[in-house]
Image 1 (cartoon, one colour):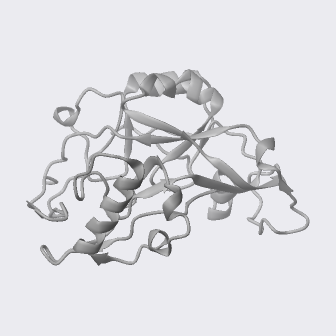
Image 2 (image 1 turned 90 degrees about the horizontal axis):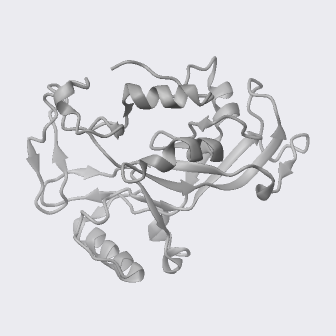
Image 3 (image 1 turned 45 degrees about the vertical axis):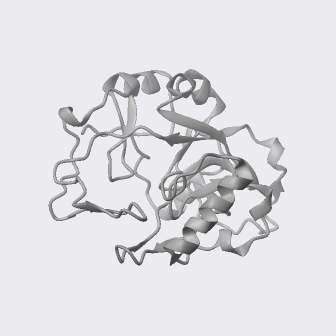
Length: 255
């Protein structure tokens, strides 16, 4: 399941807008395995108020594994949550809220404003995704700057343009992020060669990894990520439900 093909990047932006996460964990530079990395996982957790003015949680610049674990423990304490280092939280994790900006009023059932999640209308949430809780998490987006344009193919314009005035966020219909949590098994050649005992970084030989979904990799979920990728895979039955609901701005490619 994916976005349709667009004629240009400007058309893509005009239709889908942009979703921004302000608060996050930085990347890590691990002295144990020598890996420097940061993912882009989106948490359903709201950023705790204690970190909102803390610049450490607005940077992706990598820090040492000791500093990172200390930040993770700090956040877990704010949230009164159980904690396991580099498992409860990971380098690069993004907190809610997600701020949605668009030069035009969104009107499609699906929006594709970033690579890590997709966004659906209230209608699509009710008809399809409320039944998938467990395999997905559903979190509302927070509209921030929404232009009054209605066109979907015009070149992108700055949202501050006086000819494109800003709507009050509460004037648009609600939209929701769909965070896919289920995964397939590892693709052929994609199982980790090693896993760091400290930062849990998985080393994979990309030259051997085959990005194909095979029947034996399926774990029975109707929607899931192809493991080690951001590809969203749905069963044929779920694709038919979405299509029969008349969903707009979504496409399906057989795998």
